[in-house]
Length: 282
Image (tube, rainbow, N blue to C red; front, side, top):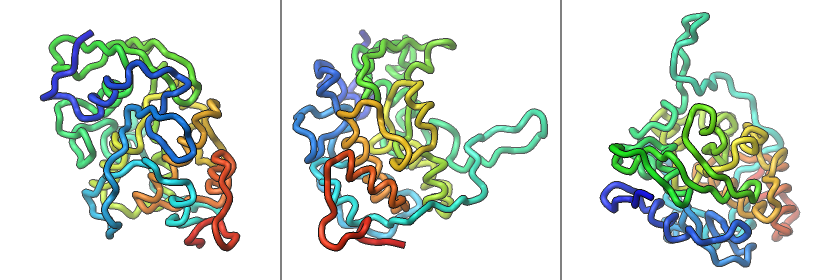
């Protein structure tokens, strides 16, 4: 095993190393008031977030669910019956071979190291940052300064399975990096109006919106919200819902009434006060 260099790896990597012995049933990238586990996983809880202010073009997350209850998160959300279908979403950044059309690249180049996101500008792409932080028993490709992950073990939060990861053309897809709040859904939920720098930071937010997960489970999720998809691992459901809604709250993205209802169901929560989906409806 190639040990991470303190000068090269992010705080995320240090936390991952500290939790290598946590079993699958206990593993969680964060701790919520719903869960009885004391394990702190790869995405560590940050200090209490500062008061909210108008979002900046270069603003990125500086918070995580921590001890926040699901109702506390819901209270600050903008809730709509359904998200609009906003034209213009295009994740690709290349040129279509058949048509010659330049793709819009609306969230910036995939896994770029050049953004305002946490762990950025460290000489390593975002995918490998997440793999290096959230896998255990990690080995790195020699000569990459502990960047390129060639193998490791994932305690998958979505399925509860343990996955032996090996980098390769036919094997890398076994572990994928999921945007908890999907990019295309974020586009419809408000990100279409953001400047490109903020969208790029959102797409590479290792502190809040990215998880290393089972590839098939990630493919099954696709661009779904809480209203249509939850992790097969029921023990992780409330943690996942809390993280999803915290991303929405942090980035001021709209969520649906179905998202809120699903979160309350999986967390065993009930509305506080008047019987509304959240504090801000419409």
